[in-house]
Amino acid sequence: MSTELAGPLVTTDWLAQHRKDPTLRIVDASWYLPAMERSGSAEYEVAHIPGAVFWDIDRIADPDSSLPHMLPSAEIFETHMAALGIGNDTNVVVYDGMGLFTAARPWWMLRTFGHDKVAILDGGLPKWIAEGQPVTDRPVPRRTASFTASPRPGMVRDVDAMLENLNSKSEQILDARSADRFAGADSEPRPNCRPGHIPGSQNVPYNHLIDPQSKTVLPTHCLQNRFRGVGIDLDKPIVTSCGSGITACVLALGLHLIGKEDVAVYDGSWSEWGTHPDTPVEGLS
Image (cartoon, rainbow, N blue to C red; front, side, top):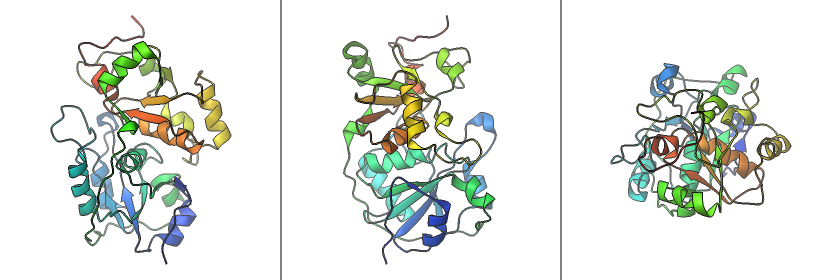
């Protein structure tokens, strides 16, 4: 029997019931900032949900870009998906080791390449483990698949589009970084990256969409309040940004959950904007 994903989030109970379905591929997309002193791949080797394959965010990326984990070409993405056993008919459930930090990045990437059969495990690995669900260190048997990408370029913005938007103001910009990084009060973790934010942008730190105890995503009315509370007009297009294009996808997920589809991610995010020679910056002087 084929597994049908009920929406962009699935519960731990749902995954426990369906995890052995052959049409389902579970993906561990854990990744951490250097300051966190954790390794997603190392933790995966020690304990992952049975049947889960590891999605290396730094590797499933553009190999020719100097920026971190940028979106790869369709051809490169197809090769990686085939290696993970993800085909066009595969249902994918993504999780990470913090509850919701990096799992939204593969969710967004798959949808950007035309694959809508993807959901995020609400609460991630912390909730799964807290409930006594099984984990393993056993490797996952390889399986082959064929994946054909159908790119949706409207879901991605580059630096030229962001510079043009400074003049046109056709899209609102929403930054997922912490309030202090957004304001320029904290230095950036990447070398030669100026502090501050894109002029005219608003700030909703990604973790403000997540319940701190359960690690699950807040109810939709709370999500709406978070966005509206910083002056975002939910009737107008939005581009999300962050440090390097990862937690921007959490904001894109939150907006998707409240039914907003005219949302794009600035892939280079602050790693690009903060180091670019021709980009203006707002923040503390």
